[in-house]
Length: 229
Ligand SMILES: O=C(CO)[C@@H](O)[C@H](O)COP(=O)(O)O
Image (cartoon, rainbow, N blue to C red; front, side):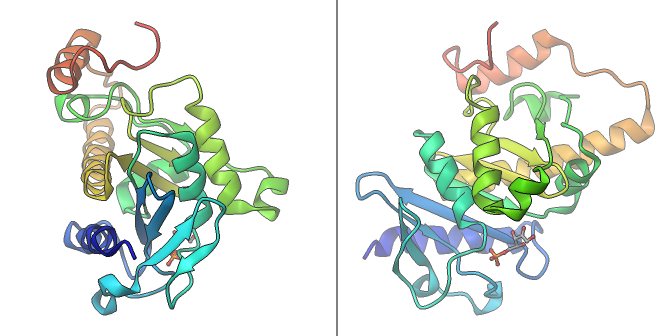
């Protein structure tokens, strides 16, 4: 079942170590078949150099395992909540990539300091709050997904296809698993550049709005905008 999607999601997962986004097994990619209302996700704790397409786990939209010899990623409930909240999203990535995770641990969103950022993400990449004691002790991964979904309730999740979770790490998404990984790579690069930018000039200001507009709209068209213009 879903053999093509399993191969695509497997291939996307293998891009994480290729682009240096993961250490050990600190990451997971999923992809969804909206028609079948099923999604495919990396199995929990399986090392990338031992991973195969056949190891991918198939889940339904109630969080039940439909197929797979391994347990699904421990972040599966977060992926599920984001698929429910973001109907145009086809793929989701979670990593602990070090620069983006450093911003998440610092509790700061990543300002747009330049066109590299603006080409892919409109405005600041947000950092949502840490979960409360109750949320942490309850359904941690589900509550992480609900928190992200709530943040983007009145925002364009396609204009900023990434978020930082305070004291945890980044999530990114896209039209499919490969685009989600592409956005995860961009996130890590702009996180690195922004951290260095602030080290070089502690008083640096975000890029002018017109430069951010120009670059984002040139790539994404006038229909995609972030919030009220
Ligand atoms: O955030 C965490 C653990 O804190 C997880 O993302 C792990 O880093 C990966 O878990 P699996 O996908 O292997 O279950």
